[in-house]
Image 1: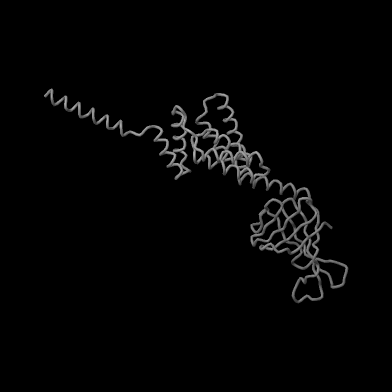
Image 2: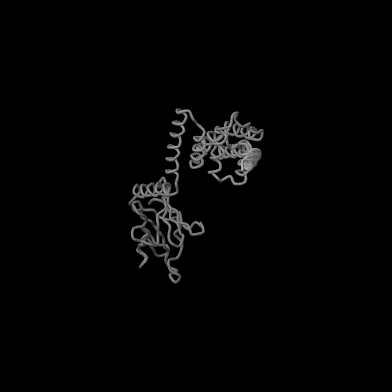
Length: 285
């Protein structure tokens, strides 16, 4: 019985040693995880594991030459950037560096800054959050958290809903500013009715706080007096209660796609077809 117990203990001891020998080292785990992340770059949970695992390795993993190359390219583009697109191009270089060394905290911090400059606040916030995972200095942690809070504001004010709301308010303000002004269209030669060859017609627009009133008048060919054109005297292009039109900034758009636009400086109203063809340009009377 004692001999059997000794043999069993020896067997399990050998098995344990074999498991230890076959176990992957943390550095080997990191290598395999990086390779997997390169195949699935949107796996943020895996990225977080890589960052946290790399923190435990002493000494820190060596940064590949490929990452250093793209970091240098990204720095150059960033330092010479003059437009949002330039910053986007710098971020693309840094993304290549991150792909090679996704555990390097500084790359995420730099990307946070670059994306903020490019106006891509969601991307900036995400990279700031990755940078935060490996920072232990309380002052730096506070600074990154402040940046994240600021980027959240950027996300809010640059959302499609926020932009649409600002555009709507700007349009309403413009219509209120020029409310009551009458604009007469440049083209006056078209016939109002196909069988009315002896008369000319013209279109005018009266600005209201919520759109336009379209006024059609006619006069005898060669005459000087304009008069109301039968049932076509006035056509409402007001948005209140009118399902056929909507306001988009300084534009009134019909359900058929026609567009009437009030110039920001109040100098004219343009009327275009759904395909963009210019129908009329109308100027203040």
